Image (cartoon, protein in one colour):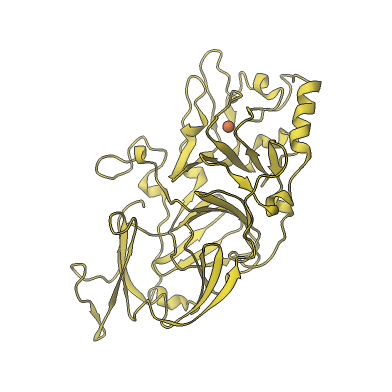
Length: 401
Ligand SMILES: [Fe+2]
């Protein structure tokens, strides 16, 4: 997805014999868009496709039913009220979804005890709290709070945690990639892209290769929302070497280089990743619009072809009533949205914001599940109306976007 890497031992030419310790290695081509797009070639000591046993485990316990219920409204969900504990893979609960993306939250407190894979989409994890490591057949990716962690579709992995964590998980059903405008004709990230190749944390190659990680042979594979348990015949991590463009990485949100202007730039200026049917944007601490008379606070807007999801990470959003860290808002098509009363006026003359948030704008309706509705704040929409009726706001109000 980012650039080509090579790890371990590979033959001089692809699709040719690699003999290690007197034994022929097995090439494993991992390809995108059929065989037409990015690919990675791994070399296994044993055939990677032999399965000793398999069993249907039924629907993922956190899978939700995507449906709009009740009147059109601005929604506020409180994922901190979701149950705590469990493994990263099995404790996740789906909050929202459509055909292109599903948004899950997890509050795990222990490692995955099997390998897992998500065949329903590329995974883009956002680490809100906690740290640890993602173990894969391509190497190990360390992560910390504020990291996006990318896991290509159906790549087996295991998350190991240093302690309890809070993860936002974007299941990118229609794929996810670096926006095309950030590439030059040679495929390199452009010099005015909001990040450079150096910002992406590559997988580390363990001493002794991934086989030294002693991966479990049990794999839980998610496809069509159901889990199938496989007992893999050979070590899935017995990779001698690999090269290619598809590999897991971490990208720290604070490495994102925001753009500001004389006057306010639209939210999509903060685009970080693009998917089929959605974009992911990062709002990071930054200087704000500096032109004469500029209003740094976003204008009320009707982006009439997008539903807007926001995950609040840190910063000054606490001045918005009822919003806290890890709050989720959904502002659907059909209602204009924007700053709370008072914030628009109060933003004039301010010079910076310390907000930290992840936004997903989707072009298909983003529908809540029963897990989201179970933690919905019923006052959010009503309190907004009430505030608007009572008070226009004052310049003394703290600024929130
Ligand atoms: Fe918006």
